Amino acid sequence: MIERRPAGELGRFQNAWLNARYHFSFSNWHDPRRMGWGDLRVWNDDEIAPGTGFPAHGHADMEIITYVRTGAITHRDSLGNEGRTGAGDVQVMSAGGGIRHAEQNLEAEPTTLFQIWIEPATRGGAPAWGARPFPKGERAGRLIALASGVDGDEEALPIRADARVLGATLKAGAETTYAPADGRHLYLAVAAGEIEINGVRLQARDGAAIVDEPLLAIRALADAEVVLVDTR
Image (cartoon, rainbow, N blue to C red; front, side, top):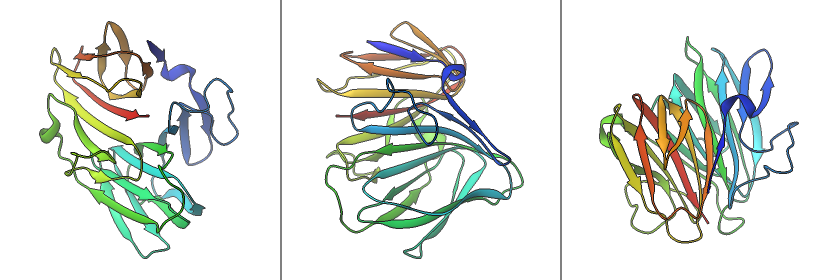
């Protein structure tokens, strides 16, 4: 089953500095049919104006993955971590027992990103943060693990969840496949371009909730960039 979720039908929020689409219920947008997908709780599609961003605020017991699509985001937290994550790169924050952080767009252009929240396998523990560049050339034509709590994904940023976050860039006409284990919940979003997945067409910023598909065949109808979460 593949349920397409068009970008135009996602939850919306907009103020002076943030233009957001919500794939799942978040903040003041509530849809009882979209409270999560397996352990995936939040997938926000954010555009942040230059010189603005999220002020310091707290989290606990959540794995928060940020995939930057354009521009860059600068992270600061109560552990003293600070770092800039640019387009195509990923940062991970394990909130653990509690952490405060701020995410700011210090660039001269808008920043667009996916913010993904996944329920951790266990609650509590020491918070942590990390970031890593993932040059698009490394994942050209195939899915690679960007963040993972699954054995065998040693090159990915670690998360404390039974989940994988994967990314791929595909040239028009190229195809890649993915075979999930039985019973997994998959969610895919198109960061750019247009694709077809098992015959279902998705355009830029569309999402798809996927279950009980033994093999995904992802074909680019135009140059495309995709992000896929595989969770229990």
